[in-house]
Image 1: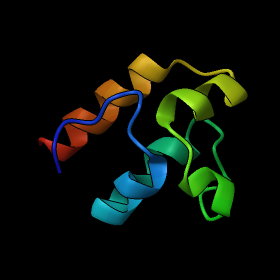
Image 2: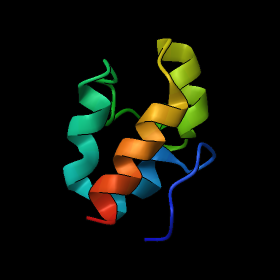
Image 3: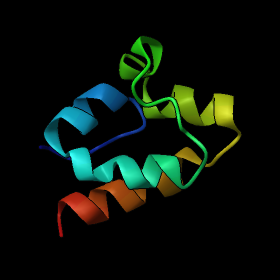
Length: 66
């Protein structure tokens, strides 16, 4: 997977790296299986959940790039 950005769709991340679900769950995104969240960008989801998209993107990229 290429670098994750705030515009990356959550479903695409989970399809490519299912083990990243823990990062979404730890900030309160417990609806990862719902159809709407599968098509939502990180930025959109963070806005709804009141979390920092830049911090989540950094964590996801660090995890994926090991």
